[in-house]
Image (cartoon, rainbow, N blue to C red):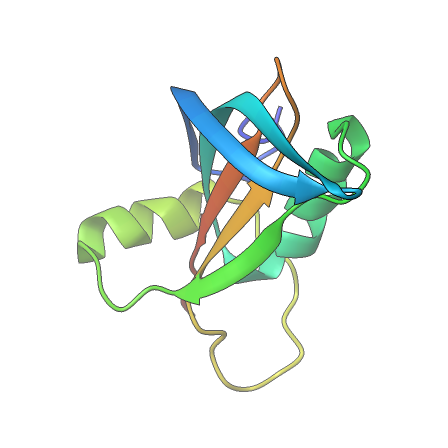
Length: 118
């Protein structure tokens, strides 16, 4: 859905992850799937809305980590593969990584690699 809507250039789905976490006073263990979503920074709000719409967790994980470097050809392809949104600021938005969580049986951890280049 994210790729067909051009919110992501590519999505990797990695099965076989076990998550152990505290929820509502008890320790939970869930079998989960890691999903890595490659997109641009300006599309994060849209990707987040799409994930949230099908996310079964009451509180899902969403964090950012800067991308330091990458293959320029790949980063260019990634940027060109995702529809652009207007940017108001004059400066470029820093590339980042986001990780999101989705629940048992479905996709659980969503990593979003984001990039914006002018």
